[in-house]
Length: 229
Ligand code: SF4
Image (cartoon, rainbow, N blue to C red; front, side, top):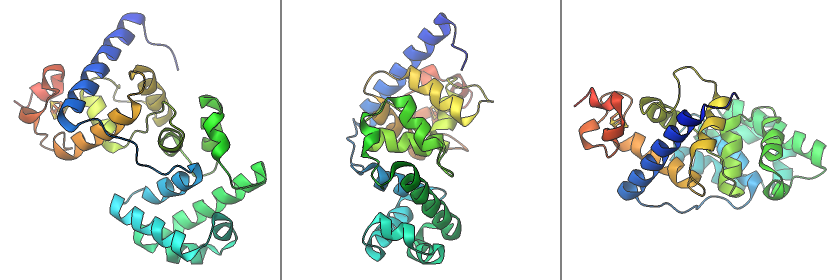
């Protein structure tokens, strides 16, 4: 990605610091309660696509209950995996993605252990994950942030909407570049906090339609929101 001019970079970093501090004052500083195991996190994130947290957690628990380990899932027929994850939606698609991902990991690594990602440089770890079919920048960032404590920043629909409204992202930017840009702007050790708090903010205040800008702690820095009050 082309680097931002120094003035623009400094201004965006200042804005991200302001957002991080204000959201922590509003919602608190969240602690990471995700899976320790990167492969659990990877499968859990695949299951979370296009569904609610409750449904994806249910699907993950059902998958773990039905199969004793990931090797058994790898060897299972996609139809059996789909039955186990039915509650998470798109079961036929996700079952194939999960099986393919497990096969690819085994083929390349010789086992189903992803803990090597924890000590790999960020770019190599990200490249490994995004080279797996069906794993995009957001899923890779979830695994590396939540399970490996690396300073990556998964961006969901709430985060894209809010960061665009606040002028951090241009209207047109692809997923990969958006992730890379945001990662460079976030203060050290604040990636997890900002990720969780922006999602909370999107659910409670900065709605897609009729955002509650009059209640928003970010209003003084949001030209988009000033048009609503
Ligand atoms: S001021 Fe409005 S548009 Fe801006 S971040 Fe807050 S809720 Fe969203």
